[in-house]
Length: 310
Image 1 (cartoon, rainbow, N blue to C red):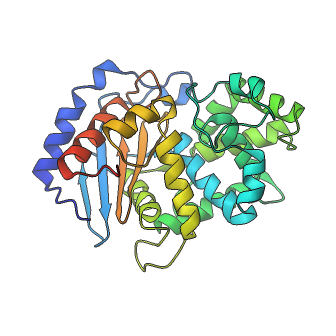
Image 2: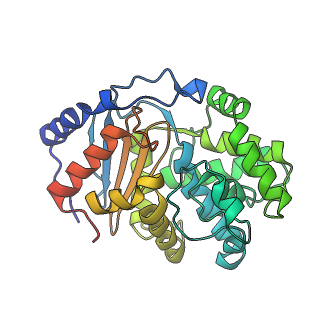
Image 3: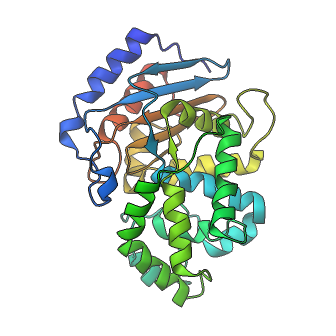
């Protein structure tokens, strides 16, 4: 598949999508994210021939936030296999907000419904191997370095501390799951690891490379060598379709139809099967926590280039 996204066409699409930014607002419940410029919108489209079409300030850095859930899931599946991972987290979508506790209380056994909500992501992060927070985070960062080819990627200490200091809901989720045997970790150590995971800082171009590898059945951008096993890449894309855009995933599947994962920093990673990766940054969010202009831009791209998988 090839997207002939000429610069003037892509720039015009970004300009059109930007018109929706006043309808959203930046995430202010994490203080360190509140200073982002809500009018920002940038996109990178990485393709199988190694070309990368871009618009906007694609070098601007932002934190992965919930996009990191896809990467921690891949690492956990490669370490432990499907049986072990899915004994601790489910595979079903939820219509509830990403930080809701209600399904933990009403679902039996009390394990999270899927790895893309906060409770599920915390359970998955607890499975990252290592003897210390530093070693476990180092494994995740090393995985990001391998996927992007960029060894300079690290985490934003200010954002990580801001998230850790205000992680009241995530603490509640952890203690609930620990009470019911889903988690065995020390809660504060797990939260420190998880908030640093979410604070991994990246730009659109590198994000599009990760999206491309997942789209390309786990094969690397530069050599076609496998980085993620094929069956795991397929699992990731399935979760991105069913759960990746929080409780707007169903509508997004109808309107856009591309496997994608968003984060409350305003990032979106999309993987068009068989060879297109898209990285978007637009920090003005809708009421579900998704980039409002980013969603519009992906919808426009999907319609123009017929990208829907359905």
